[in-house]
Amino acid sequence: MRVETALLSDQVYAQLRQRILAGEFAPGERLVESELARRMGISQAPVRDGLRKLTESGLTRYEPRRGTFVEGISAKDAADAYHVRVALEPLAARELLTHVDEVVLGELQGVADAMLAAAKEGDLAGVLEQDIAFHRIVWWRSQNELLPKVWPMVEKIWPLLEARVRNSADQSKPLYYRDLEEVALTHQPLVNALKDGSANTPDLFLEHVTQVWSKVENLGQ
Image (cartoon, rainbow, N blue to C red; front, side):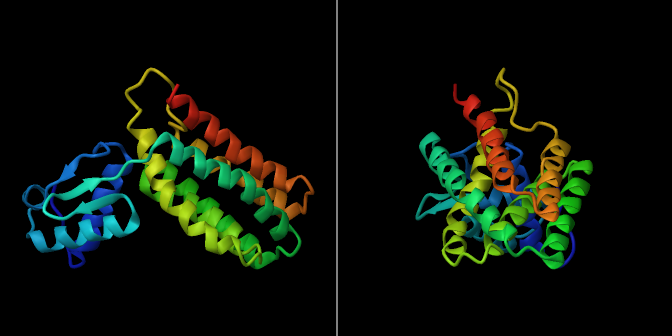
């Protein structure tokens, strides 16, 4: 595995992020800077920067004198994040529905399209980025001043949850959204509901969150 071109640290970050999300590195696994640099065929400096970015994003944690480790998420943290989304995402959708315009709809449709394109390419990290972006728009565009303040906590846990799910891929139970296109396609009805001004929109968002959680929750049973 070699990294090319100028922004090496960004490429290191992107590659390692993709591998963590894909479940190639298990929670608690140490990421050794020198070993990663050797495998990528680059110096340790961009690897160090890439690992720092992973820690800033919440996917890894740095322990002084021990190194960088892949972060995990407990079942309780996953459940807590779900309960926050169940309570607040329908609220965000309800408030957005009162003033949604062509600009916001265009943003959401663009993200949904990009998500589907990434899914067709098998780009897990790309799908996750667009998935997060889609729901971020809903929360931030709701015009509720408190929701954007809560959102960063939800967003930070999201990739950890995805990694937890992917690390369950070798279990006998079905993987949460094994088909990436399935993930992408679940968002189009949400865009359509907002576009149509459907009073059922908050319920659709609640159902969307609940369906995801039902798949995740089953992994721990």
